[in-house]
Image (cartoon, rainbow, N blue to C red):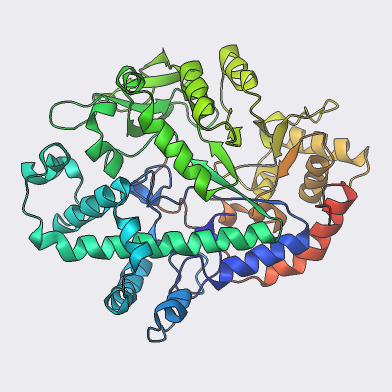
Length: 477
């Protein structure tokens, strides 16, 4: 369940009352893990996989309700579109910004805040966002040379940017504080948080702007090669993501510090880390930036073993899940198994209505992910022959449920998988309106689904609890 998709008074979910209510409901339902999308600042197309930073958290999640209590600001009226089933990103951001700036004016810094602002990533991100605002949010590759090259020389007079930099400090301090409080509450209730680290960062990001040598860029800062995947289940022209490719030789020469910092910091935010696009630690698809699709490209080997050896040498207790989906060569699974990472089994892809469907133990079984149709849409779109096979398979076996989707959820829960993750859209029996992302496409309606209130979910909680207990997956009290 993405945080942004939670109900809230201000057009999106945030770290306020709605999130605490969801934690309570999740515990009542018998869940032990809440998986979320990346929390980093949303970039191009509102995608959490094109973030402005690997460290910052999007101020979209900063609860105005909690700020009223923390800073004693005026009461904030509801956002006009609060009851919409779709997130209205530009409108919600504009509405919130007015009240966030008022809270900033009333905020009184203390020693904890001043210590926070001394962190290097905080400084870089604040300057990056101040420059973006000064340039009407154009990408850093289009800025004036003195701004574009600031991380290399730091010779620019920053007086005109000082207020905005302080505002960005405030936003990051408060949103991190609210997140850690929410996570602490979830931990006390026995609910672990599984966070998500995008494998790539966006070109228009503080990471790329300040660590240019870690990427394959030309002299003007534009990528010479970009990321994606070749033609697959989702697209016959592949997926051209557009993210810059890492310069792994340079990163390795510097002891993998860029990646070690990303993962070790995420480990302070989450109980479990899901490494997105895990296969790229073995081989990654390298597309010439001039190519309009992802058809042209080549697989390049990455120093996966060298990196993970270094990671666990310095941070032995990090809990990692590998997103090992797609058309993989055997070496990817060998790398995964070498470090005993649990992988992912998306049952929409692997379920065989003509077989017995044994699910391995050391994995996470999903009915679907944010890139899949909801289970209801998937079943409706099956060819007629497949639909009959699905119905026959379940009619021959005893699974609870009033329809194929509910029975399929019970099949997942009763499998041998170590963990089972069910998207909220599947628990709610949503159709296409509950789909989060259509891979290979950019912009609306991707990432816009939201649950406008809790009523439907909370009505389902008793049924969900029964199914989880029947499968012997309820947490031990």
